[in-house]
Length: 232
Image (cartoon, rainbow, N blue to C red):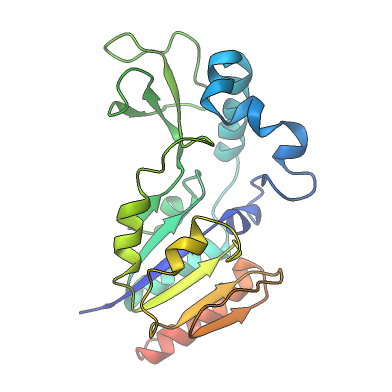
């Protein structure tokens, strides 16, 4: 049976594909306040602005491609059962070829009903319009977990982390939740790798820090893990 690798991925891995991040200088939060585009109150107050914000992000997603970091995680599947838990709402992991991806914060290319949260559909293009409704007549909204909303996938993610033989954190620091909280579920004896160019100060047992961007740092981690399982 293959060992289980849990990957916790964040904005840093998608940034190398050209996806705008929120917190970095020049990122999305400098253009828009959180309260104006990423809360349910914003949706009720100015639906047009929220729709436009996510339509533009969706349009950008259609124009970019997975990078070397995403592809390294696919390569890791040669020898391991790789489960990716991502804070990202893009589909770059899936497009690269990863077979098990859990999205904590929703998926940009999907929409869901405002009257039936279980009604989720894949969008054909990049634009979600006013008047796009579910069978019950409810307006479709972005399938995104907004600030202040519950994170439905956090419990399944924690259960996966508890079964990890190896954990990789990439593109996010261990100072940012929910990744920081999920790492605490990983068994103490499991090797942990943190791939991020920034300074990460966290009290985590059995951890190796690789202060590089995702594409180069992940190659080092994947090479090491494949070597341990006699894969080149």
